[in-house]
Amino acid sequence: MIPADTLDKLLQRSDALQAAMADPAKSGGDAFVKLSREYAELAPVVAGIHTYRKLIHEIADLEELSTSSDAEMKALAADELPQLRGKLPEAERQLGLLLLPKDAADEKNAILEVRAGTGGDEAALFAAELFRMYQRYADLRAWRFEIMSLSETDLGGYREAVAEIAGRGVFARLKFESGVHRVQRVPATETSGRIHTSAATVAVLPEAEEVDVQIEDKDLRIDIFRSSGPGGQSVNTTDSAVRITHLPTGIVVQQQDEKSQHKNKAKALKVLRARLYEAERAAKAAVRAADRKGQVGSGDRSERVRTYNFPQGRVSDHRINLTLYKIDKVMSGEALDELIDPLIAEDQARRLAEVGAEG
Image (cartoon, rainbow, N blue to C red; front, side):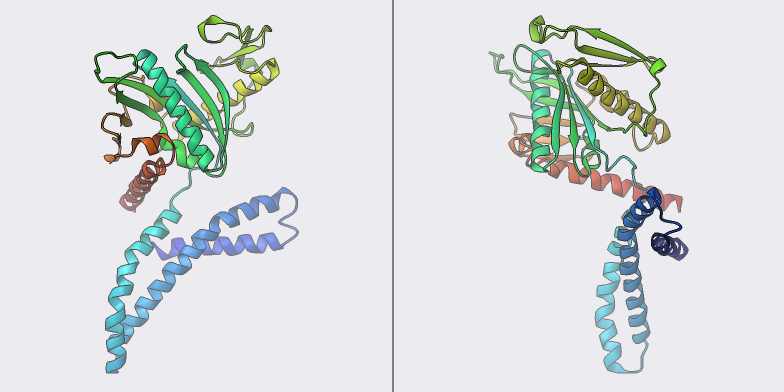
């Protein structure tokens, strides 16, 4: 059972916030925005507490009636008590979910990075398909999907693709996509019909604002060079490509898709800020997230979070032992929620168990 004093403190905090918002002396300027944001975040928790306590009181009233000398009242209590008691575990679970600490990054936009891993041309083709899968998924959720950089192969695959995805709760839904994705199928270039295994890595990073990550100019080395496309041909004829090296961490970001050097620099800084923010989150919460290298591994075939087996038409997520036989709908983005929702539920269950163990 959730301690009553914990719930009381939350209700008191909500009341205090409401009073502060109504007081001009306490809610002037930016203070009102801060107060109203916290109040809005607490609102579903307060509603959950009231629902939970109402159920507790109804059960207590019926338990009292069950000892009544009035036979009719006693029969009524005996009939309704099992139903209400049966609702209690789920009500406690739902309230427990509301009380779980929020990941500060959940509501942020995300930087998606997809790279070809082991498997040569086939890995690059699969990386391109994964990137398009997330693009279609973003479209289905009415998120904005902006391609930041593409490194293409002669066959139309992607060595590396980076995009910014903006919308409500983007990072919360996509953060479990990070890792190695493995594909098993017969490549178009395979004449003997033999199934090949290839891999691509996915990293989903919360997009950081300037206030989240401070980057000092002295910590950056910025190199300007001429852009080049697949096969070595020039993308444009000016020295507009930008490579930024963050000297303290050794993180290197390169952008060349824009014709403007300033636009390439701005995009590169956005990606660098996201990588630094994720590394900081990893250091502060190692259990909740790993650093970028831990997320995507080495790209080796053996390290994987998910396998896409085209001959069998199945997609298997190895973290939750879930297999779907609808690979076409997953790759089109339509059935991706059927993998994402169980991953979120599993994470919530694990965190609830950890809270219970601590209690």
